[in-house]
Amino acid sequence: MRTEPSDLATRRVSRAALTPDVVLDAALTLFARRGYHGTALSEIAEALAVRTPSLYNHMGSKHDLLRTIVDRTTAAVLDDFHAVLDPDDPPATQLRRAARVYAYRHATHRREALVVNRDTGSLEEPAFGEMQARRREHEHALRAVITRGVETGDFAVESPALASFAIREMCVSVARWFSPDGALTAEQVADQYSGFALRLAGSSP
Amino acid sequence: MRTEPSDLATRRVSRAALTPDVVLDAALTLFARRGYHGTALSEIAEALAVRTPSLYNHMGSKHDLLRTIVDRTTAAVLDDFHAVLDPDDPPATQLRRAARVYAYRHATHRREALVVNRDTGSLEEPAFGEMQARRREHEHALRAVITRGVETGDFAVESPALASFAIREMCVSVARWFSPDGALTAEQVADQYSGFALRLAGSSP
DNA sequence: CCGACTGACGAACGCTCGTTAGCAAGGTAG
DNA sequence: CTACCTTGCTAACGAGCGTTCGTCAGTCGG
Image (cartoon, rainbow over all chains, first blue to last red; front, side, top):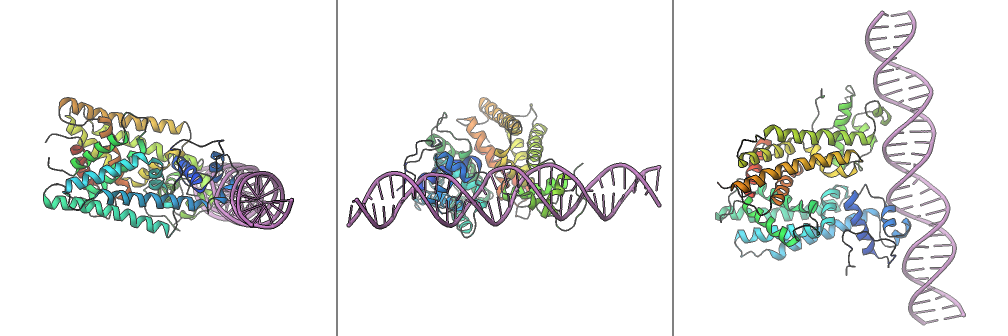
């Protein structure tokens, strides 16, 4: 379904078959680097070695690019969460897995994360509302895990909401500094961050 | 020196004396809401009940507004840090105070934090380099605290760099959700977050 | 009462943006 | 071979951007 993305690299000159997904990938790279309003369609076209109007054979509008990126990304985050959360697991296991998969995604999908966390405010309705709903769903689900852990005595925090915010945003920020060429792999970072999350929640060892 | 800012509220109609600081404050509010590239000078002018060219009596350029905001904010963060850090304190006290003042600033100066963390990439040189240098100084100073704590056995983390990133970004994110009208005051949030930081670093109780 | 200064203004600038229309080249199906 | 469909192109659009200039009303010290 998806064309192989070139990660953070910029396609150039190659002029290999232009498709909607190729355009989307170039937009993703540039949106992540310069922001949605800071990126001109002419820059996306240049990165693809094509004139600006040609883009319109493969997309609806500039705003559609942003909407598609945000839609796919927020949906994937929720899929991740529900894929690893087993209701029968103890709270500590649930939190560890939820934090790990969340941190892992932000290490392996840096561009998506940067765009979603910076340019979400440029979405128009109804896309903005839908995105907020999905974000809230994830937020509430994570908070529920912490709340249950506090009730069972596995966790110890004054405010589950506060801890939930802190853990989420801590994981989100991985996208701001992680590099696949760095000393740690995405898996190692995700493991350590899930450990941070457990400590933060006051998980009893 | 500074005119009293109207926090997140928007000045309107009042037409009280236009000064450089009043313009800066309106720009701060709008940059925080819509981003630097997403904000037009005409919107800042409208918020001040003035025509766009009049702004130029009180500022150099749009980019100068951003530069001034970032300069003042990053300088204040470093001042905060050095004001609370006593080299004779044990690592746990140093980390608690550093995290508390950092979280507190992000709760009480939300607009500045949002702009600095979103639109810093729109800075041109040399402003961008200067900002990066100050950010790095704060980052390295906090990391040094953690490293020392690991050496003394007060902390327990695999990678001080990773823990430092996590703690910093966790505090930064306070600006994204904190509300002065919420259930918790800025002081309470800062206290809890500094507790999070200590736990995250594996501080021995 | 007058001179100089401050500051908001209308008009206009050059530029870039996102987007549309129409045409031409190339591959494909019949 | 021909008709068609796809797709990149040039040209052009209307709008909005940040910024500059000259003007003119208001204010204030003398």
